[in-house]
Image 1: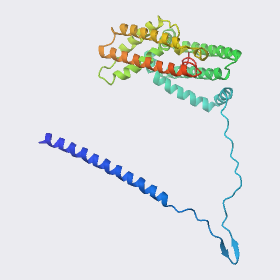
Image 2 (image 1 turned 90 degrees about the vertical axis):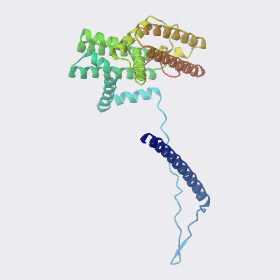
Image 3 (image 1 turned 180 degrees about the horizontal axis):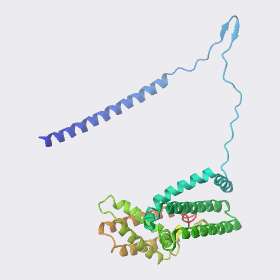
Image 4 (image 1 turned 135 degrees about the vertical axis):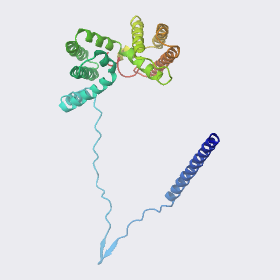
Length: 319
C-alpha cells in the first residue's frame, strides 16, 4: 500500500509546485503591470505657491543653484607608482604581518602533503611556514619591481639580482631548519609543483566517480609525469615565455607547441597505465584534452591581441 501512496504523493507535490510557480509568475506579471500603470499616472510636479503672511511675500526657497565642486577622480597610478605604494605598505608592520599570516594559511593548505612527509614538530612547522611565506613575499615584490622597471634594462637586471640573492638566503635558512634529508624532500616537492597541481585536480575529480586515487598512487603519478616532462624539451615553451617573447609568436609556433604537448601527453598516458586503473586513466586523458583546449583558446586570443600569446604578464609565478 505504501508503494502506491508514494508516487501519488510525489505527483501531488509536483503538481502543487507547478501550480505555485504559475501563480507566483502571474502575480509577478500583474505587479509589474500595476507599477508601470502607476508610473504613467504620476502627475507632474506642482510648483509651491507663494505664501502670504501679513502682506509679506515669502517664497518657498528653491534649491541652491551654487555650483558644487566635484573632486576629480584620482588617475590610475602607473606601474612605478603602484610599486612605490606597495613598498610603502610593506614598511607598515601591521600590513606586512597580515600578508604573512595570509600566505601561511595558504601554504598550510597547499603544502599539506609536504608537512606530513617532513614530520616536523610544532615549532619547526611554524618556522618553515614563515620562511615559505617570506619567500612568497619576495617573489611578489620582485614581480612589482619588474613591472615598474619595464623598459629599463638596468632596473630589470638589478631586480633579478636582488631576487636571486634574497631567495638564496631563504633557501639557506630552510636548509638549516630542515636538515639535509628533509631539505631534499622539500626541494623535490618544489620542483614537482606543476605535476602535483595536475594530480591534485585529477584526484578531486576521481573522488566523485567511485574510483578515488590513493595518496601512494598519486605520488607515483607525480613522479611519472615529472620524469617524462623533464626528459622533453619544447621547441617553443609557450607558458614560460617572457612578455616580449610572446609578442612575436606566430600561429606556426603555437601549432608546433600544441603538437609537442599532445605527443608528451600520450607518453604520460602510456607510462601512467601501469599505475592507474582504466577509469582513472580515462579521466587523466580527459583532463589533458581540457588543458589542450584551454591553451588553444588562450593562444587564439593572444594572437589576436597586440600582446601576443597569453596577453599580459610573464612566465609562471615564482619562475
